[in-house]
Image 1: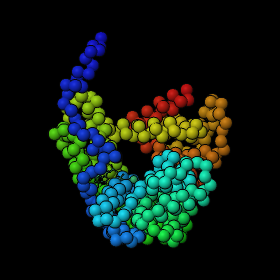
Image 2: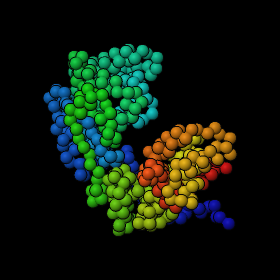
Image 3: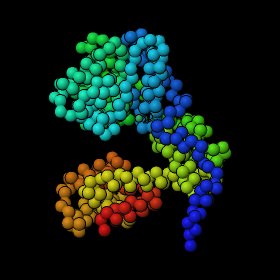
Image 4: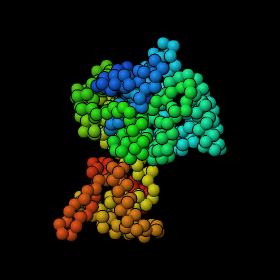
Length: 398
Ligand SMILES: Nc1ncnc2c1ncn2[C@@H]1O[C@H](COP(=O)(O)OP(=O)(O)O)[C@@H](O)[C@H]1O
Ligand SMILES: [Mg+2]
């Protein structure tokens, strides 16, 4: 029998693992930014003319996810605002993350959002686009100031609204009388800049800054700084930081991944009322993060994609390299069972490519000699993740 009075006693009695868990979350602002001295200095140098009333060049920042782009740009931006205030200059730094829902879904939304940040309320719907433009323009030009606009995840903006808005923003200085506007564009998508209209491309990337992946040793430094704030004394067992850093270094040097691993490892230890965070907790954390990611991706997929994935998961039981043809046969069978309309082979093939992009599956083209080329599919998931995925899909379709 469970003694209901005491189910929390063990939890309370155990020594706390975290002293400040927030230090391992994305919203935390670290005091120092190790291994980004060059990027911080370069960005600072490029923006400095704003302190003397000039217009800094537009800048393009790019690098893989978790390489510190958002952190560095916001840090340098706030330092710049701080010092400009002290020197009686007017520099305003604005930040938009285009991945955020409702902020940059349409050109209208974004302009309304920016006008609001500049102190001019615009209704969130209803005005003709040129009127929103005018409102934004007036807000921008209302006083003598240099405005630095950080457009984070800029590729999603272009995906959603096209690149005309960027064209307009980069041309706006020709018409401004009082203020000046500079744009910092940020993207994880390394090929993005090449997809832009050449005129937009050349004005956006007057300067470029590259954020290379962190290596394992650099990630260790980043983790050590944050861990010393996040964890109580001596709870981390030797090798924990090194393991998180090594795993994240394999994932294109992603500091976010490294911090997530360390945080989840701590949470797992805490949840089990353990005294220490061990290397085993890091292994479990890796699995938990992967499971959560897959579950989330699958739940948000359209039904047809789920059926395609279910077919692949089913076939993966028997073979490591799955042929597209087999997937289609299985897919048709499941559709029939479920009473769902089947799509054409071509559409199914597109859905397979999308699954590949979301990295739940991986595909490669193999040559079949004189029989041409064919695509083979594999699932590179650990047993636990595979089983979770299979259970989830069975729950949906049984
Ligand atoms: N050099 C660094 N020092 C401390 N923390 C870092 C460093 N680089 C990245 N981080 C942390 O890693 C996470 C991801 O960084 P972020 O700037 O969001 O990456 P990106 O924008 O390139 O995807 C954030 O929590 C950030 O605070
Ligand atoms: Mg970012």
